[in-house]
Length: 226
Image 1 (cartoon, rainbow, N blue to C red):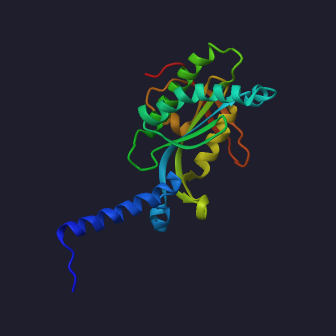
Image 2: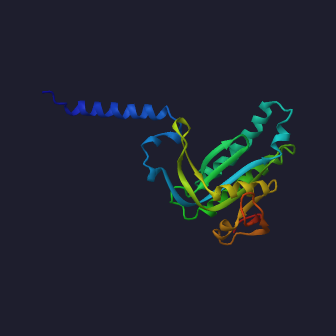
Image 3: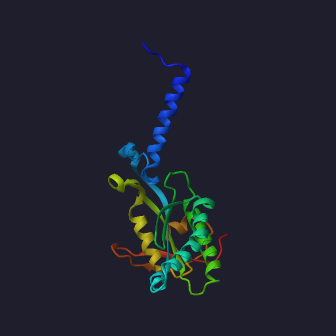
């Protein structure tokens, strides 16, 4: 009977890990190992903050322009907009579609200050993109909204379309608030305002949101954070 020697065991282990790594690299980052998740692991409710941002007037800016010019503008903005979200303030880019960004905080349950992180990231994104936009007066400007609350966090979809994301009313309201934000401004929901002590913001009153019976409190972030 055959018995593997010490070095043969290590060769077999190395080959196994190599096969796993090769298989994982063939999948999209969001889908890696998702088939191994149990239902309880793949989905759960957590208190999170969601940031939505897009460019006001992007459609009219793109119309009639060379796609390479539009791509240059987007790359210039995203090169300064995404690092504050991902690195400095610990957010995660949930999706990046055209001129729109959706980012989240608190999805792993390890950021009790998720609301403050999201608001500070939003302010940093506006500061950096405004600096670039001032050199290009014809470029559109970002409008941003942040909303906080409970959401379902987990893997959604089927087969190759599976992705790790967040769903729920908190996310929907964040998207609706973003549509009400002025170009160059940041709008936050009531729960976000309460989650950031000392935040300076001006009340926009109750905003009617399609699909909700009650109005949603919204606040326009003032320049600077304490």
